[in-house]
Amino acid sequence: MRIGIVGVGPVGRALGTAWVRAGHEVAFGSRDPARAAEAATGLAGAQAMTQEQAAVFGEVVLWTPRGVMPADPDGLAGKIVLDPNNREPGPSKNYASPRPQGPSYAEQLQTAAPRARVVKAFNTVVMRMLQESPERLKASGAQVFLAGDDPAAKTVAAGLAADIGLGAVDLGGVEAAWMAEVMADTFRQAMQTSPAEWRQAVVFADLS
Ligand SMILES: NC(=O)c1ccc[n+]([C@@H]2O[C@H](COP(=O)([O-])OP(=O)(O)OC[C@H]3O[C@@H](n4cnc5c(N)ncnc54)[C@H](OP(=O)(O)O)[C@@H]3O)[C@@H](O)[C@H]2O)c1
Image (tube, rainbow, N blue to C red; front, side):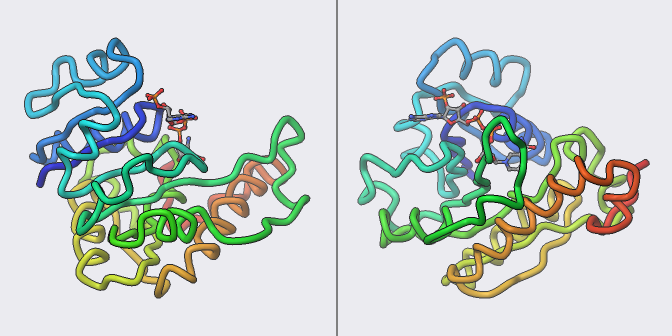
């Protein structure tokens, strides 16, 4: 598939690289041409673009700028838009307080781009997991959580997860996306409060 990565931070870069290795055509789209070029360097099947160009390029678009809504929502019409975003609690790193309020990131994106096929996905993936081979990840049983209103889009998202060794759990429509976002809060809170135990408690994988 053609996958446009909007925003070349750690998540865009790691997932884009994993999808190139799985045989997809990936465009790394950044406001910084040097960052996009660096991400694409050495990866056959990867290109460097602006964020806007990557959104046009992708049949599937990974939307990584947290809380930033598309300037051209009509340009996303019909496209599968994957939302991996999680909130950040600030320097306190306390995910328990304040509690999340209002619509999830995926709901905000779906409202901003009503004709896009938004799927909450990959937000619970820990970067460390993406350094593993797909074979090892598959053997671990690790899963991602999906939420979105378009069943066919979720099937594609599940396929992209499977390509890099991850299973997928469908939580329901986009209104369920908050659950995946709170799941990520839970994981990250547990990493801090119970660093030795959190994997066994909340992650379906043992990569130790
Ligand atoms: N780190 C993890 O382990 C992890 C795991 C799962 C999910 N997540 C979530 O996934 C999302 C992406 O994570 P990340 O660590 O890659 O985030 P990040 O580096 O903070 O941001 C991702 C990209 O967003 C773009 N961006 C930021 N502000 C923008 C603005 N005002 N306008 C347009 N673009 C803007 C930047 O793209 P440019 O390249 O154009 O500068 C940046 O590279 C976050 O919501 C994060 O919470 C993180």
